[in-house]
Image (cartoon, rainbow, N blue to C red):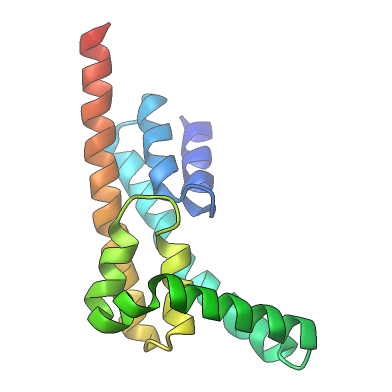
Length: 155
């Protein structure tokens, strides 16, 4: 069970799946639903403060570097073009909804980047991303639970 907990945490904090991969992994490996939810949620909530700190630290130290500056500006333009209009229009709620949708390309990583590039106040952005992550984890936990029940009934 400890191994499954560790893998669940690592999947939930990774940019390749977040809790959308961690929670189903835990449920498939017979971890109690509450544990899967809590571990996935905690790992996913850690993304915002860690990524925000990394972004600020790297930007402060590497901004004079021309290649870094060019890459950040290009990424910022792409982020604003892709989701910026909706998030800017709806603000806090737009960011929350963007993060809570359990689809690839949304989630805490992209929400944190969008909040940084759109210059959303850090406290509001953290609260918005956290609520979105919580709702996304609830959706994934319920879906994983119902899916496992259906799979067991089928066998």
